Image (tube, rainbow over all chains, first blue to last red; front, side, top):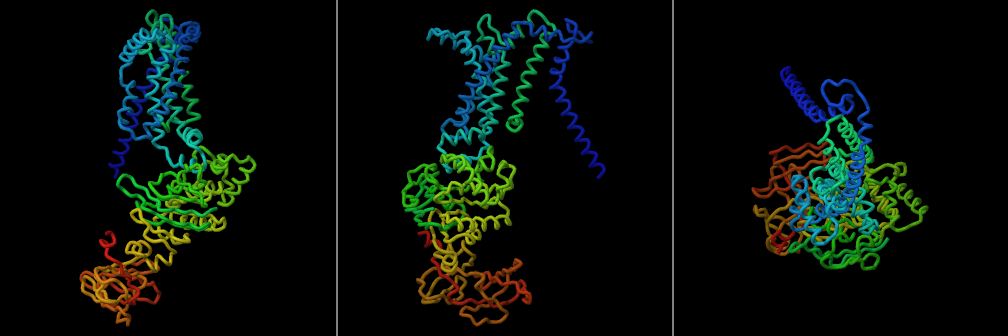
Length: 273
Length: 356
């Protein structure tokens, strides 16, 4: 008996230990970058000589960071909205309709997650060059061109998370609406859409975060002179390594964290993801 | 409220006949129950009435008007789903109001009718709750209130009690029946539970393999089952295989000669016996059929006892005895006499003949 209890206790400690290690592993970069952002010396060497908020002011004074943030925000929001407009019907079709090749279409829509960003960027770049030559439209380096690329990496998240929330959706709820006198469109907007809202919000949020932080693909599609926040950070790093970069990163992390917390207040993300 | 007619209603999926030429006439204010095992076509029939399944043939008329081609939202039927299908993001009151909003009623009229519907199911005090904050029985009553609020021409109930526990089921079915009577609702309910069916119905329709086997009152089905299936499905029966040989004579496959009601066609047949219509005693009972046998198995059911008695190597019957205080319980292996009157045994064609 005593042995059995001891084994069980040991097992619990081991499990907690492993979980703690994993947690520490995940948090280490976040914690160190945040710590670094407050160090007072310009060349980060351990131990810190003192603490300051100056680097945050420095980061906000960099026009490239502020401009890059605004471009990232703009592109992320546009790509997310377009991704949702395309992804919601796609997820509905995949979850609801039995059509030939459904599995293949489902996998295909998730592909952008699998293809390396560099490859995706190159492919889209080449395509846009050809498209511009063929149509003579100014696609290369335009915001619409960049958004079009980002839509591609938003779609897998949207489709995946909405299809997941549709899978747990009792269709007789829709039938109840029809039975009570609602036409198909009314039933969709008044019953189906609110029911899958958690999936839509979560899909949109993850899509936005993916777009906002994307570097590799964006490098190929950005116009000379234009910059997104990740690119601005990369370019800054080529010349200097001071805590400004850490301060900018902390602000970016905080921005996304706040977005998630606010979302979680309306939709419990843990229930969908 | 209105009369509901089904005229040779059919549904085929490829070669599979889910529903085969079902014709029914439900009178204004009548409570009709479709009863049958799963896969018998009862739910498909109900879904055709609601408009969710398009019939392959036949017609549906509500109040004399043909609705066969109408979509669900134009039929004015009130359907209560097995899963209740409440709108999870709307409160109880908003759920009940939904159908009234679709009908574009005035706001004060909607409020009045929601309050009335919730009062009918005694849930007025929970109108601001969300469905997930309610118990199963309460959710069920919200679903009922939602269907009643639109004042449907026909009320359709799809196994409405199957997700409730046994005690609650009994309460709710009495409640549904009382409401139905009080409001004079033309009602069709689907169930596989014969006890449920027998307690609420004005008339029952027994279905099997997509076809109507018999339509009638509880008494019709129990006393005069149309075939072996109904005899086995409504109430209980034990069956003796054998053949009719001459007027009023039945010989079992085990060689027992029995008396039965005259008029059965000679040839292979089965005799169906109700366990509660059989007598059992230690000595001969003086009935038209009176046979010695051996008790093989005893089930103690509380209010009653079930005894399986072997009459011959291949013939066994079940006898049900009321559990009286003074009665002595026969034991396994005991020699007993089993008896029944000639008209207690009903004769049906054997299964393969019925199928042909």
